Image 1 (spheres, rainbow, N blue to C red):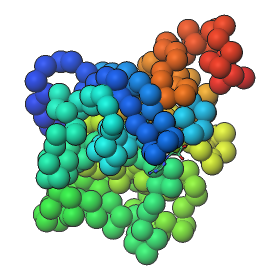
Image 2 (cartoon, rainbow, N blue to C red):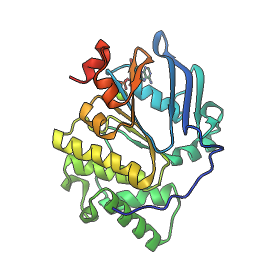
Image 3 (tube, protein in one colour):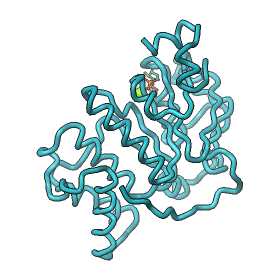
Image 4 (cartoon, rainbow, N blue to C red):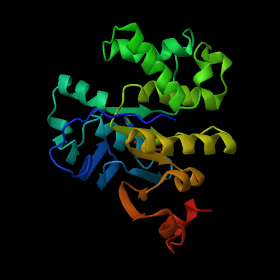
Amino acid sequence: MKEETKTEHTTADNGPVISIKGLAKSFGSNTVLQDINMDLHKEENLVILGKSGTGKSVTIKCIVGLLAQDKGQIKVFNEEVSTLSEDQLKELRIRIGFLFQSGALYDSMTVRENLEFPLRRVLKLRDKSDIDKRVEEILEGVGLPDAIDKMPSELSGGMRKRIGLARTMILKPEIMLYDEPTTGLDPITSKEISELIQSMKTNYHVSSIIITHDIACAKITADRILVMDSGTIVAEGSFDELEHSKDKLVNSFFK
Ligand SMILES: Nc1ncnc2c1ncn2[C@@H]1O[C@H](COP(=O)(O)OP(=O)(O)O)[C@@H](O)[C@H]1O
Ligand SMILES: [Mg+2]
């Protein structure tokens, strides 16, 4: 896999790339987030474990400004997200990549066209050789150089996931948000995707939040784990630390 030279954006200091303090969010009478405090450090893989419905997806939607918080601070690259204009949010979202569960590729486009799409639309690239080079590089990066002329329907679930990741990573985000990246995949494919997430950190120096309840994925990817429950963070530690926790809830994820 090739090393990428990273275009450095400026962050004011070497502090966390994401810093969340006292985040609260309700929907009507449904209080989802009560008091979330967390930092994501540069080039860190931070795993968030939590039961379904605890507000993990809501948290990442608040981070990118798709949902507005009721209370608290969310700083991304040292800027409070809730104060950003629509244009500034657009800029921010170029620097943050998502991998949602569906990975949604355009079925009527080849892999190459799927990958060219964000380059043309988001980065407004027009130079054919530059575009080709980036497409080839990222396909190499996700281990699928031979898939370039295939249609999504010709790919397995795991391959589609890889192309979905390539389509996000082609924009060279500094932060990646993975929402349940291995859900619905068989154990072997899950392991491959987890290893790929790990290689994104090593090869592209990206900082990532990985939401999962796949403990095998956490073991491969996590530098640090947060356990979320009832809208707060209830435990924090390395995989090894949490694996031996006496806490019943924490323990339940490791079974
Ligand atoms: N846009 C929304 N409007 C109303 N309720 C929502 C919305 N998004 C999420 N919720 C509620 O917030 C809670 C947490 O959802 P979510 O963050 O998706 O959980 P998970 O931890 O499984 O990702 C759920 O009760 C869900 O119904
Ligand atoms: Mg979710």
